[in-house]
Length: 69
Image (cartoon, rainbow, N blue to C red; front, side):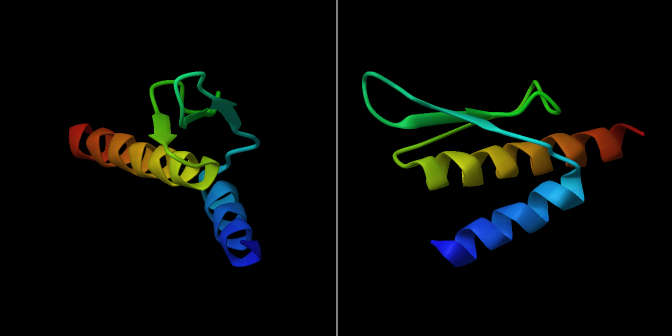
């Protein structure tokens, strides 16, 4: 778990993400989002999966943005 947090911390610094919010859903699972990328949302069965999914969504948004520039 400690290694995972170190990984996330590096990614957050690289992407200039100051914080994320993770919300536990009543029906199960988690949703993660960050105000720096309002169009990106992650979801998963665990908090870590939701954060990893959020990072994937951010990468996808950045790829699309770079293609359109």
